[in-house]
Structure formats: structure tokens, C-alpha cells
Image 1 (cartoon, one colour):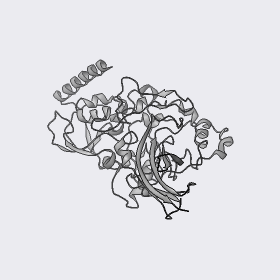
Image 2 (cartoon, one colour; image 1 turned 45 degrees about the vertical axis):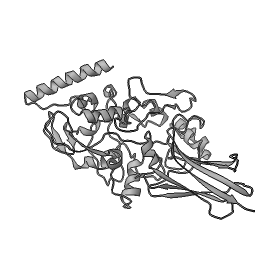
Image 3 (tube, helix red, strand yellow; image 1 turned 180 degrees about the vertical axis):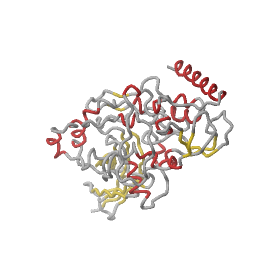
Image 4 (cartoon, one colour; image 1 turned 120 degrees about the vertical axis):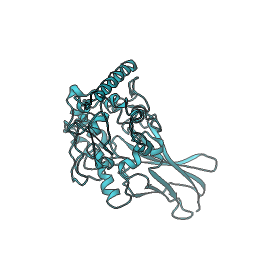
Length: 406
């Protein structure tokens, strides 16, 4: 595989040099299916970030297939385990086509293999999906061209530059609108999955909790040339990393956690989960994602005397997940997906940007001194067994010593 990529890169380099020598402009006959390696020949640092997560703490963690306990999903051997989520979109271990029937004809390949698109209006009340590439052009998954190639065949970026291809400066590439098509499905429904852009716009940006766009957190900038071997100045260039649920740094900064004893001497406890670090709900995106609040109470000898846990997760549909809908779910075209979500409901909804969620709990404790430990755990797939921890990451934890009197 590496040999093929090297040969391909040499061929691309020869084509680019010939085009420059003849004063021709490089075109993209494959459209958004243009392999990212072809862009990586000139944009080496950006490609290294995209394909290998270089300079981040991204780490792919194997998870399991829903309904197949113990059957682990892992990346192919020729794909970096530290690659960005965009780079592995074409080899996502959840087969995007087999989910079509499961989800009532909603094809996941639309965002995994999109055609070139125009950046949508930031204020659009409802966002449609981009057009999917034909199945014979799905090699490469989500490529550099998927985002940077315009429907007119030009490369959009932050600046107009001299390059072997036509370029156009589009200020919208700096904004969250760039991410909207694939990260917001349909209308805003608070608590529903795949609403990240709308969560950011409605809960974070409009109330002025912050002015950051998606890129400010997920694509931090660094000073460098866009293309290393060309005569262009160093600029503030976004790092193509998109750190998220597979980044310890991103998870650790998302939620704050505080434990209190509201009534002195009483066993009453309160757990405050505060979204002060994310510009959207937590967890966000796929309904597979979850955050667990796990609490353990130990006595002075370290013996566990009480425990509790809560799960925060996006709803599968436009209503809360709930076991009472299981029989009704059997009649749906997406029965499998709907049932696995409802089987875990009711549960806590996602924590919105700026929200402080307070969860009270009164364990049965005898008079004495105790240590309360609370821990937030992020799970990439809540539908596998809770005992499966390979795809779980601790986000935050805290302890509190409490005294209970008669």
C-alpha cells in the first residue's frame, strides 16, 4: 500500500510540474473523489495532520458492533490509528451502506462520500445533506477535495494564491457554516443526535456565550506556509486535526464537575455537571456517544458502601429514548436502530452549551465520615456492554469528604 501511494505521489508531482511548466491549470476530473495524497504532495504538513493526526493526541480506540458483543471493530492495517476522523471517514468501521436499510433509507454515505458543495447560509433554519458521490467514486472517503473543491472546480481557501490550480478566497471557510451540512441534520431538535452545528449556533453563538467558530477549537492555527516548496508567505494556517471524542485534551476541557453536600451533616449529595468548555452539547453527534457520571462512596477504611451512575446521551429521534416505545419500534423500517436506543431510555439528555445540570442523590449512609468520588467517562459506543471499557475515556473526576450525623 505504501509503495502504491509513493508511486502515485511521484506521478502526481510529475503532472503538477508539467502543468506549471506549460502554464496550465491543474484540474480535478475525479471531483471530490480526488485522493488526498495528491494534495499532500504540495501541502505536506496539512496532509500529515489529516492522515496521521500529527501534533495532536488523537487515538483510535477499537469499539464493538451493536448486537455483536465481543466482535471488535478496528481500522484496516494500512490506516493510521492516530488519523483524523475525516481521514478515516471512508474506512469507518461502522459500514455506512449496511445501515441504510436499518435507518429507513437514510444513507450514511452522504457525509462519508460527499460531492463538492457550496457553503450554506449560516442562518438557514434547516440544513439538507450534501449530495453523495456515486458508489463507483467512493474510494478515498472524505478527501481534501470534499471540503476545498467548489462545484465550479476551483479550490477554495482563506486566501487567493498563485498555485497550479485555480483558487478562490471564500471568507465562509473560516466560519462554522463550513461544517454545517454534515454536522446538522434537518431542523433543530434539542437533545437529538447529529445536531452539533445547530447546538453551536442556537445555544452558544447566538446567546453570546462565545464568538468562537468550530475552527477556533477544532482547527487551532499555526504559523507556516500553506505549500512548503512554493514562494508564498508564512501565514496563520488552520491545523487540519478536528480533535474531538478521540482526544483526551478535548474531552478533559469539555465538562466541569462539582460535588456538594447541600445540608451539613445529612447524606444528601448534589452533582453539578457544567458545560463550560464546549461550544455545543456534550456528548454531541451520533446517538452512539454517551457520557457516564459514576459515583462511589467509601468509608474511612476504603470500603465501598454506596454507588450510583447516570448516562447522558443524544436521543436517536425527535423524542427522548424510552423503553415504552419498544413494541411500537418493531413496526418501523429502522427498527434495529430505534430499539437499541429506546432500550436504554429514559436517560439524561445531552448537556447544552453553558448549561449546569444538577443531579441530586441521597444514599443511605450511617453516621460517619465518607469519601465521595465522582467521575465523568466518555463512551464512543454506549450500545456495547458496559463492561467493555476499551472505547471509554475518563474526562474528569473529583472527590469530596462528607460527614453524616444522626
